[in-house]
Length: 210
Image 1: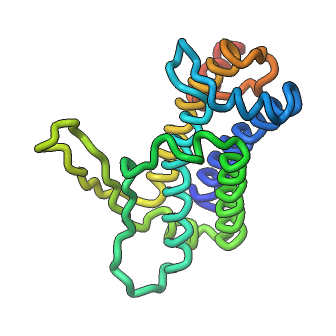
Image 2: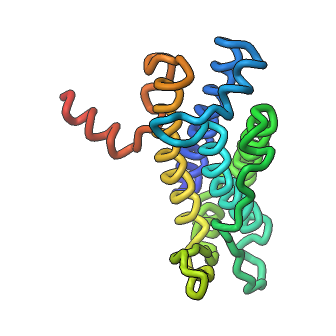
């Protein structure tokens, strides 16, 4: 038994792999130039582009991956009491990472590499539990009011944030699926069955099929 870290890593890698596969499919189907244009084309139904949804969800996944990586490097034996911070709402909107398909793809490949490295370095259950239980502080804006819209500090753990990052990404992939089918000319069958579908939904469907 290897604890919860490995399933969390595999879940995030699976999601990132599906995201990359969609970009590669667009390039294979329509060519690099057209795919780059499709990446930034807003869907009238969703009101955003693939690039915008990818950038937003990657802001969360990347933060969680880097914090997990830092937790592993500190190790359980470290006497450091420093708490890693995740500022989820300090994001760069409208930049290269949501407009450049190649940069977006590279970002995802780089984060997969972080997860792969973490998976390789931490195969034992004791190390897994040490990393996932490490405390972190997650910051969110809970109000748009200029006077009360400061970041709220929520105590959490590395494991919880890795789970949140994967769960959050799935919901954005559901939006991306709508964009791909309704705006970019793909068929639903072109995408993996799991694309944009929560594990709880997939489990429910399996139970209903029995």
